[in-house]
Amino acid sequence: MAGVFTEASLVHADPKAASNLLDEFLARRGKLEKFLIARLGNSADAEDVLQEMFVGLTRAQIATDVRDPAAYLFRMALNEARDYRRGLARSRVRDEKWADTQYSMHEKGALSDAPSAETELAGKQLLARVKDVLSELSPQCQRVFHLHKFDGLSHQDVAAKLGISRRTVEKHMHTALLHLVKRVDRG
Amino acid sequence: MDGDAERAMSRDRSLEEAVAWHVRLASSQADEAAFDEFAGWIEASPENRAAYDRVEALEVRIGDAAGQERVSNQSSLASFQSRQQRISWRAATMGGAAALAAALLVFLLIDTRSTPSIRYSTSVGQSRNVVLADGSKIEMGPNTVVSATTGEDERRVEFDRGEAVFRVKHQAERPFVVQAGDREIRDLGTVFDVRRIGGAITVAVAEGQVSVVPAAGGEPIVLQSGQRLRHAEGKESSEVDTIDPRWVTSWQKGFLIYRDAPLTQVVADLNRYFRTRIIVDERTASRQRFSGILHVVDEGTAISQLTAFLPIVAVHEGDAIRLHLAKSKR
Image (cartoon, rainbow over all chains, first blue to last red; front, side, top):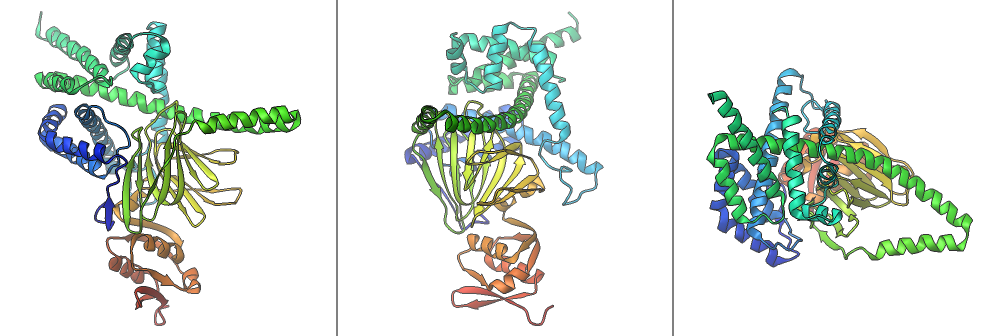
């Protein structure tokens, strides 16, 4: 954005928190790069994601208290890598569509990233399949998966809500996810 | 055991380990050492990376599908709730003082649970990115003012003026609401743009869905990706049309896209990006309409693009620039 705007400014609700994170990032750049190379399997992609992270950290205002900056940054790297891979998948689909369709500025959906009617239908079908497969597991397991994946509760919050331990929550998530990836995933 | 069976076993093991890693790293207790170990595991064999890719990709697909589902449930929930709202006020007025007092008490209770809001603003030509406590982002354009609150039950943004792109992280138990004038935009995990300038509100969705509802209560309008809603404050209704989803955030890269827009709007926009004021008299401006893309890299370029497309000339007048109808052009 810097090219367009005369000033792109940093805003810090907690100046210590934000500059701390940026310092931590710069201090750990090498480690984060190694991590991303491991995750993505090549250094070009890792470099792209690292750049995204840097831009995000310099531009953003961090309004939360970050207890463990290192963990925060590694998680951020893992999430950015996931989104990056997702972007690559979409580009591949888009490039294939380009080869097939007439490109027009006014043609919505031809090259867009947005979910089409087909994607929505596929989504509904996937959910139906997921629910089907999960019904083979224990009710507790299904409850845990539902609360975490569909209602967005953290492991800790699921544990509190169901009156079970965090360890149990994680065991159930493991069971559910393993079952799903074997039965639902087309590979 | 033959080669194939061995490979299958090894793939199964990688898959099981990949799931274990996914769950472990999703925990808030995962520390740097955990991520280190994870990197070590992934590098141990290409099967491990493939397995993790697979688990992550499925998880993303399920998350996306679940998000879609929530939005469609939310919009039917919202219309159900707004109907409930109307019914309960009717009951309150009919049921007398006690019912009304109960309704007001509930309203007050909800109100006191919100946390103080933080105000963010940008000046002309300035941009600013804000990351909220929940990870959602507000990418502010120039001359923009918003206030954000992340409370227990709701994440709310008051949109004073200007333009911003919202990238919202889904949270089922805490809806994300943007209030712009007399309209509320409700979202559950999407990318959308909000404009509020001089009483004109525009909401355009790049990804996902939002629902736009009158702040005072009423029927929601659900906008999909590629749809745009335009609303004049104070009016009852709004207009919905289509827009290429890629155009929704194009201003962030310096491309202002216009489709039969009045020159007054173009000039007003340019004045938000550049310090040297551009002025044009009402009569000239109201007659000219512009369709095209302005690449706003610098003021000079933007203005020369305009004068190339329209029968106008730009003349310095004091420390401003005035646009005149060109006498020689038709």
